Length: 499
Image: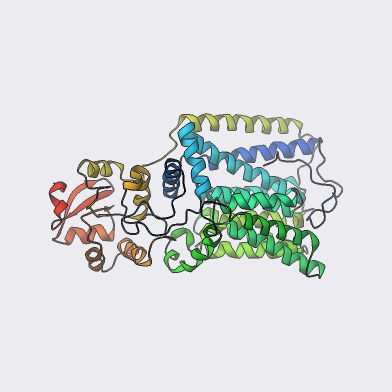
């Protein structure tokens, strides 16, 4: 992303949101412009720290394992290589490009470089957003908007390919605002399609802006927005040039068709607004109402309303929705009271600049010196115990476990993992997902255990399944390791290895 500009454009390209800089706008090279630049870099440093946190996300482990598999085989797998329940089934590796980047960084520089990569993506998102909210003019307003997006991002800017999708979204917004040429959309959508399934929402954003512009201009074919649609469509067609062909473009459709399997996944549920990031997202409704009251154009309101509604439907959309709402409605907030004035701000500007530089330096050292992966939420010692007895990643041994453990086993054992299930809910057969959810949520588990014929089960010690297994005479609790238990089926041929 570009360096945060302390100034806004004085003239905007055809179809862009900006028109002319009013009196009092931030001027390049002025004290206020320097202050805006320092604030932008400070916020970007905060974004870097959010993105470069130690990696605990279970999805990341499978992405990294897949990247190494692609490099080893010199090709993207088209069928599942990891599970015992869906081995050989067609699998669309939607984020193959980012997985390759992860593996290359891991092999050449080490795991710390992946943290740095995530940090740079998050910093770029903040820098790009800071430039997008420049039409709000007042620095206090700009800081409030970007800070809201960062707070929401603290729980949603996960260290996985989603960050590439968020960065791509910011670039699309910059193109639509006239800050980038429209031809950028062509290569941008190719990268996005090969990196993350959220590219469909990027296409929807371009379409929503075009619809809003058509309403504003009272014409079916607004020239600038139509050009953006053509460029985005060309990028989507170009996106079919990839190792998996048209399957990547069709992936979002397949995802929607699996809605029943996804309804119990936490990030696919509607937010309950119990957490701070979700509550901040709810407050963005005030921004929408205020923008509407200040007569925001439909070019701004249509995408803002559409993406805000998407966030209300699924937690995973909150990050995307907040970026769109903040960016497209910023021009409508121009002129609000409470701006920072240039007078007397030179010392404050230098302090902010020094603070940003110091924080970035400390963060960079921390990223290099501290562990990249946090595995404390996984039963690492328990898996060590199972591996010593050939009870995991072993042919002929069916291991029952939760989906998060499946990602860990995939990362640790690769194609030998033979997992019951990991978090690829969009991929596994519906019966596997239903059986997994039954074990997680409790109920009549006997049919599931009989159907799956697990030899060994690794599960949370405090769970409905653990209590059920402890009462069943055919199951023997052979190991308790803190939060985890190992339970072996007495009638299994592998039971002798459990003792």
